[in-house]
Image (tube, rainbow, N blue to C red; front, top):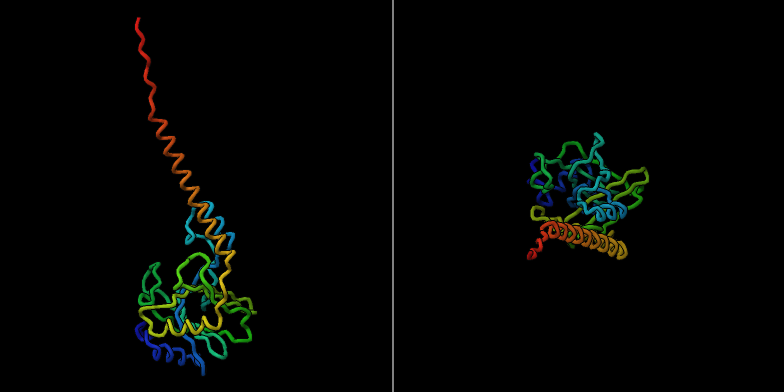
Length: 217
């Protein structure tokens, strides 16, 4: 199947149907695999003025070989959640769906009885309102973390379906967490400014030369 075939709702519906992965209610959207980032990770990253995207956090995903793929098509039905893996056509860190391909025989189903947690919320790090963070946790021990862009210029069903998903599973943002993140980031900026100022001051002092005093004999 060509990736262009899933740009349309009928094409992606037929893809899930080929795995018997549709129901009377279908909510299909695209998501990229995400890292699980804790407040401790954020605090440490901010204090060392590191990149939040470079945190060495464990990526938890699903596939037949135990490795997470960069992208997934997700269908939430009245029976549970179906996932189809997407892989990069070539090596890249830009997980745009037009640069991906459908992984054959990668369909995975999670029944409602096995779902422990399913929610959507604002990303704790990114303040972009177009991004949500989706968590799926099962009683069998599976933990999945996804980043979802509400709008997608390639998928004509993404915005409508994910907003429908949000209406049911969206959780309110934790303001305390948001304030903590902002405070830590401000602290990191202040530390950087102090460091730059100190370096500049040291350089200026090194340029000062004592002028010898000439006295008459």
